[in-house]
Image 1 (spheres, rainbow, N blue to C red):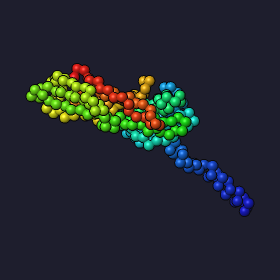
Image 2: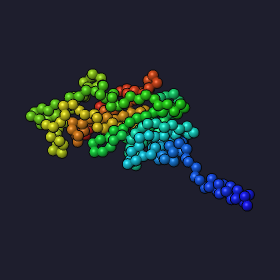
Image 3: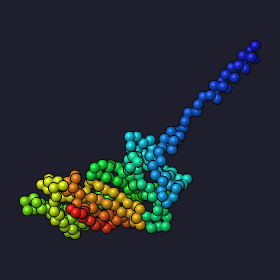
Image 4: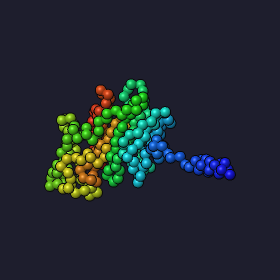
Length: 242
């Protein structure tokens, strides 16, 4: 009788241990199970960008995967389908080895489009230092907006690297804001967009005289210099018809 009781208890213990679910490891909790694939590089289908636990159209951490290598970055941005990150896998520093280029949208809406550029070494998975387009414009571009002829004429002067390179005397229209409400300088803080689908990296920074009136774009070209990417030449293109 005693042996029978022992056999029954052993059987119950074995059954309960089989049915008990294993507690997931920390790597499983933070791995791709809770991540969402947002982008695949068109140049190589093994290069992926995942948003970690996106919520309400945003993510605050991301995983970059290049073949068998993967790394988590504390990047934040939009996970909405219309503004998902752009991912490229191309040689952008001229060393003959491709890098991962990620363009993330931080804010998007009427009159606002703010992006962020990240470049990662595919061999070390380390991120290169990249000069912000907004910072470069703030340091190197000055502008003046003047109202003339009793506020009926707008005069705009733009200096890049200290040279008075561009002037505009656009005609105002009833479609646009009242020129009396225009800013004293062009505002370059609302639209900052990057492009990596061309032979070289570039950025577009738009200038406005009011929240609804953009008058032209600064075109920035990136160069690789001393282990970092910095803004090289900057030019200005006026909008039409303004």
